[in-house]
Length: 191
Image 1 (cartoon, rainbow, N blue to C red):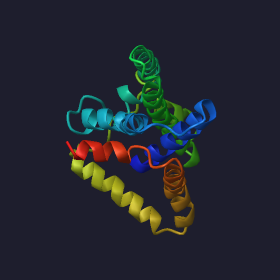
Image 2 (cartoon, one colour):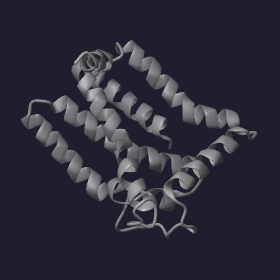
Image 3 (spheres, rainbow, N blue to C red):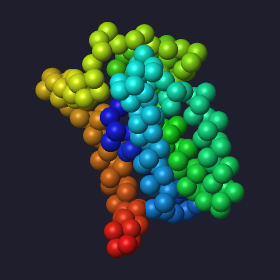
Image 4 (tube, rainbow, N blue to C red):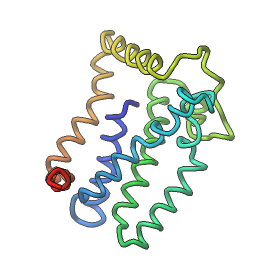
């Protein structure tokens, strides 16, 4: 799943959850926490693998349920102590939705349950090392090229729906929610 897909999936979950449990859209602070958390596993694991070569693949410690679950619960507990529960919940939902999104994407691509679950079971399950030693930029460009090539195939409508459909739904929902976070950005820009 691409970054915008993770952000969109997480936003839909947090927005709908906020409306169901609190009767209102999420706050700007919750949205910022969510956006950071939806990107966190890739921002941690990709550099650890692609730049520092500490892990054989770009899914390891931050993609692991053995790390994400306890740290997510700790984030909620800490946020509750600071009377910022909404922010802690949004952060945790964002992180966990990233893992769920990666598993769901692998299943949608037909990789099978074992492969999909391996993505989130580090260190119990790990992928073999990459076949090559590309630098980070080369790997990003390779994945981007594969994505753009896939968009030019006969399956492009399905790919567009899978990759941009959730983003579009999340964007519309964000507008309906009153674009939370924009006011906070404006306040920060005026400082």
